[in-house]
Amino acid sequence: MSRSAKLGLLALGVILALLLALITGKVWVPLWGMTQGDPRGIIMMELRLPRALLALTVGAGLGLSGAALQGYTRNPLADPAILGISALAALGAVTAIFLGLAGATGIVALFAMIGSALAVLLLGLLAGRSASAVAFVLAGTVLSSLAGALTALLIALSPNPFATSEIISWLMGALTDRGWLDVRIAAPLVLAGSALLLTQARALDALTLGEAVARSLGVDLRRLQLLLAVALALIVGGSVAVTGIVGFVGLIVPHMLRPIFGAEPSRLLIPSALGGALLVLIADSLVRLVPGAGELRLGVAMALIGAPFFFALLVRYRRELA
Amino acid sequence: MLVAEALGISVGNAAILRDVEARLMPGRVTAIVGPNGAGKSTLLSCLAGLRAPDQGRVLLDGASLQDIAVRLRAKRIGYLPQDAPLHWNIAVRALVALGRFPYDDATSPDGRAAIDRAMADLALTDLADRLAGTLSGGERARAMLARVLAGAPDWILADEPLAALDIAHRHALMIELRAIAARGVGVAIVAHDLALAARFADDAILFDRGALVAAGPVGDVLTPAMLEPVFDVAFAYAQMGDARVLISDLR
Image (cartoon, rainbow over all chains, first blue to last red; front, side, top):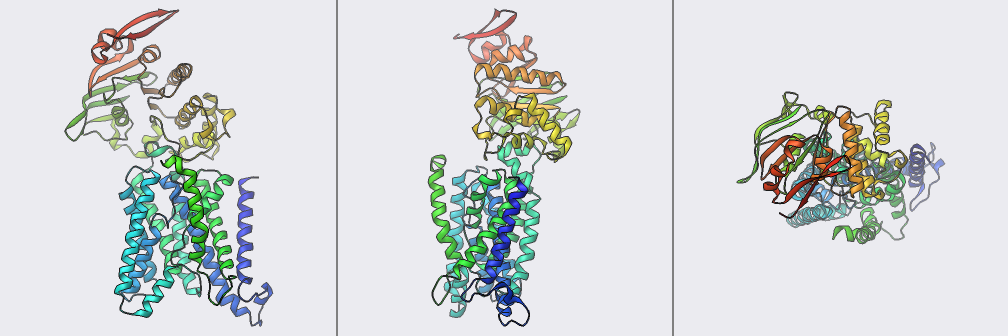
């Protein structure tokens, strides 16, 4: 099958998953429920459609960032959450909430972006030139723990118990009760970041043969890192600001797609964006079907799927990592 | 011409290169030889523009390498490091296509033709769709060289391209490098195998502990009198058919 046919199939899957997300929930609404005059139309247009579009945006962004990070770090275990980028974005967002700035539209997203950009630059510093999988995962662990501790500190210092519970619930990562405003914040950021990221696709390919070859081919590594930091800040910051931490999408999706689209980083970027959208759309439809009064958090669901997957990968790469 | 002028590199207090002069000529194969730690790889990465010297400069056709735009340098100088990693298991053709990065034309007709030509030159055409991770050592060395060749550089600088190869593949690769040089490309290789350097290179640069010992045509540089003090090994030339072969033994 040609690459475009595979991409077409993936895109078709995303469209079907989008339609599924529109009709699925505690109340099943058929697609024709959207027609004018149908009282259920409001559920579709004001609740499910923005939520589904957010799932699509955030999933695509996370899948794409995962593929780019894996290419950049030459590390199959890279993912915005595992490398601590999401945690620092969350710390940024919580800082904004703590400072009482959450009211102003976009401020939370701005703080989340600063957090994630900082994370990418710190990762580069911590892991250094080694580019070994272990160094990056360890650096990510350090960042995650530090960000987690500082977030907990902010929660503890928070004067308002209502804000505290809001922060905790938001941190778990969910698409519950998100509306058009969130789409308007996240979508432009994720789109801009993705466009920037795609311009660096070939530079990621050149890194396949190591930094010396990449430099000899004319890749400016410092510029690449800076552009990636900006792109990931836009994507991860924009996503985390509206959904909290949803982990493992960027880890799982490139892995599933590598055997189908090949291992070249540039050829994995767009498929991973589509795959991420598909995964998050389906996962978010499924969490709505879990019985009970409340809803399973999307972040929790992804962690339940992702953690065993990460474990399986570790076992597979155990020999190389040792 | 690719010329190193009074090159000096230090790390802390240790001088890795001291006042090194080197001159690479187009159309010739130059072997850079010397014992371990002589500074051969450091010299090569300076010549490739990947490392800025602390003293002196590298001139490419008269212009300082540090002043040449990175993209232009990448088009003119192809660099093959020792044991380049292969981080992703990509197809051979995709690997070779990376050589077109400075031109950003891997999918245009010109770029595709250059990639096809490089693969044909190194007998890789049948392996185009194979995953590079599944290649044998000799095939992989050819694929890595084809990657450099695809960029059609004026200079090819290779760090120990022979290291992982058996003797037959070493001969084959040296003959390939000679054929490339015959088209006007300047080739420089760091080589531990002195016999191959003496047999197949045109010029040699002999180094010891960061300082130049001798440079010039192999017949003048790779002589027992020059080599013995540097390596502390006995050398002699033996006749084998038409070829003079450098042999060595304990001193």
